Image 1: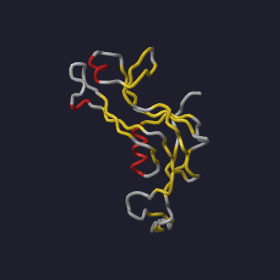
Image 2: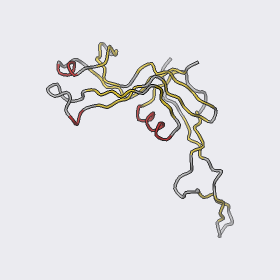
Image 3: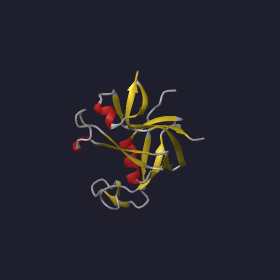
Image 4: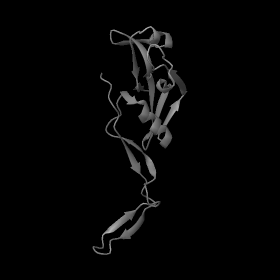
Length: 156
């Protein structure tokens, strides 16, 4: 099975809307209570939840910040991103987080995905991740690739 993205919709909580009327047409209008954005009611998965997903680390981070994702057992990792002669160059260090589970807090309940492949920098052999890369690998010019996404399976 091919890993897919996950299509979700953030549903607005319009229960606190202020009803106003267009003075010209008489049409009813709903105004946001804080004038800027609607509060979040919850998350909704579009269609059936896929059993295998690939989601960007930035998307997971945004979900955590906004409260519709919880990650379990988060660990921060740092990987060298600089050139072989200076792999830990200050402006080239990759900061990435790993976790064991990604929990989507939806209107239909929690969907738990077990992470099976973490983002990070990996030594590659014939297009396959072999192990996490080290500064020594970068210094020696070992073929490495940085992945910015999680692969995860729906927990049963």
